[in-house]
Length: 332
Image (cartoon, rainbow, N blue to C red; front, side, top):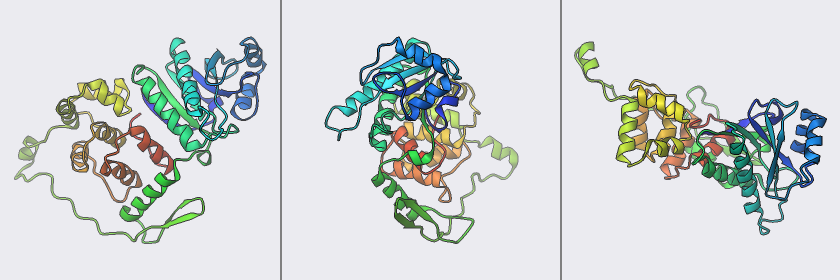
């Protein structure tokens, strides 16, 4: 089910379908459209000629030909005209129609560019928001599809400037560099943020107070898997509701459920903390059961903490911010 934001050349991805940012003629153009046509070869153009064009907000499908994918879904996004001409609804329709075609053709993996955000001028932060919201809703009922939002390079991607500034300021206040006392800077455009000097970290308390190894082993706490299942029940959630909100694949969740000793990665553990809407204290407790802790020397941890401390539990919004700061993503 997961949504993943990746840096890649969409024409090289071995997925079931890639989505082309097409124009209404479907006969090729510049940007992503031109790259896909060149990589697919002349057969793609011949197939597109038979489709009779496509309306804005809709999509049509062809084979992939020389591309490593089975299908190309040609989606026609709106031109940005200030936001008052129904652009958001049309862009959402592009993603919805494309996903419906993918499901109809039994695609399990689909890669999207950020539609309309190139020469059509749709602001990238708003285009990303529409993409993530539409895909998230669709995947709630289609958990066997994995969707990639493909960004060619990080310079072509942006979250909202205010969100970037707020997170940068939070990192400034909380980030501890254990390796150097030198100052660092986070840069957004021509704005610069001076980071605070390192702070002393508190020593952790001992996990167990036992007279012997045998006694310590007898005092083992519940495992991560046991704690997770308990918390799901306490929240009145179903398994599916939890792993979907965590952006976790059903197969991975099944492994966790079946194995009481399962040790997740830190991004997976934090994804479940977000899905369960745990407080920072509860998040720390769940992480400890997986063998981790939130650290002030990790920007990844600080960014996740920023959202949890504000009661913001949309995992896709968190992942957008993590991606913008070049950090690993939650779930997936």
